[in-house]
Image (tube, rainbow, N blue to C red):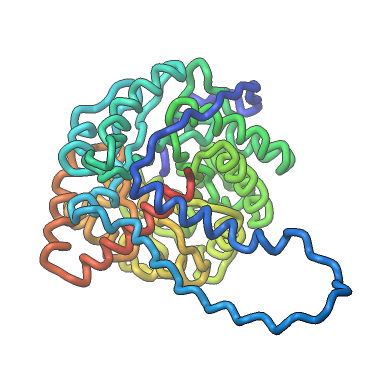
Length: 421
């Protein structure tokens, strides 16, 4: 998401080496079955690598009886065991203060089945302090036999750990991460190694998803300070698609190696705008096109491994000038069709961002999901989650087509969670 600027730390800050093992987590039987299907699929064909018998000199034998074609096992629907209320909950990521568990967010999980949380703000707390906050949420969902509010589906626990000015976790156990533009000074291999360390630090605190890396292509080094949300804060990896693909891709690979889901943002690009959608309405991009590098770079980025993609709240004049991208079927459709991305698509923050305040909370959630988004980010103001959830549930109960949209999105979210065990 775009951010308000704070006092800048040294741009040349380098990470310290610190790793920590990822702790194990229980899974419900239903969720384990979904994950097991992925493992079985990955092992299919392994028998072909076994020893091959040599030629025989014995007498010929009768032709073998053809082996009947086995009946395919029925595919397990990952959301089959979830109620409609729980399926709707999987479509939301709700923010909590990182230093202490927000009561509203605890209620979001316990009472309205929210399937993901976001650690918001800044903390100088140690790994154990962050883990203690996270545990207050995960224990609500991590119940025997899927009896909890999320039906046994684990929470995604996310934060913003980009580096530079955008680093939520800053205390003992977390490296002082350099700005993305300084991370890009490393080779791709070096950056992947660094990101693996940073990812392990997140995992040690119970974080399973990072809303990073930034994949925006800023217009140029000469005009970077005119680009308030990205270039002015050093959040860019570079000024051309090849550089961004290489370095954002390396960061994402490091996160995956640590067991943390990366998130590429902010599709289809915030590198050419002047306004910051967090604090400015009607931010319009006049540069990005449906076939340009800002869009097409997401092809190789998302094909490199599991990831989530975040859609921005700017307006794209050359794609759909009618409103913010996060509510646009045309923009979201580009990600599915032109890019070919089949994973989870999420919104930028639609709770407190000025760019979306002309719509009610209910309309924001329903509009984003109707446009094809799968996960609604309610990061800065959890108080608007309840009307959002209630509106989505009510529409799903009365509109069969929208109910199918809810099922499709929930299925995609749950499958992505299973893939990152």
